[in-house]
Image (cartoon, rainbow, N blue to C red; front, top):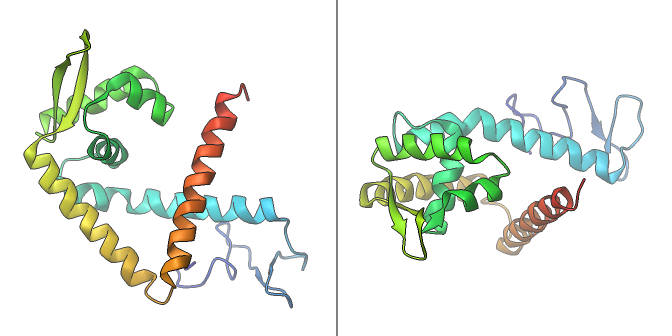
Length: 182
């Protein structure tokens, strides 16, 4: 993985401490010892999150110039699950209903989503993308997919699919762990 300096994450840590590859290809820290698998995973997840956060604004602005970066994942989830309820979104993202409500209000103001009365519960609302929201989201998503295809052009497609499966498993297990009273 490349850092913002162009070095791989095996060559530079987020904190600026030099690291490199050991004789067996494992990453080594400044003391010359290889970190355990969970330490290595923590570092890589931290770097992925940091890079995602730094790119979040530009990704959101591909959808709409006034879209907040934190609302893009919400928009993506609605695109994947039309008719979601606000409470479902709050649960999925692990945030309060008030937070989701504020973000949904902004998405409605921008003309990207619409709320309709839930036919199963007149007190609830179902959220879907507007036609403009669909168009804008799909253009941004297509751009992201093209970026990934370019960045991972040398990867075997089975490796890309395996990474996607492992990230999905990671996410599901983290959510399950958090929900099990931890």
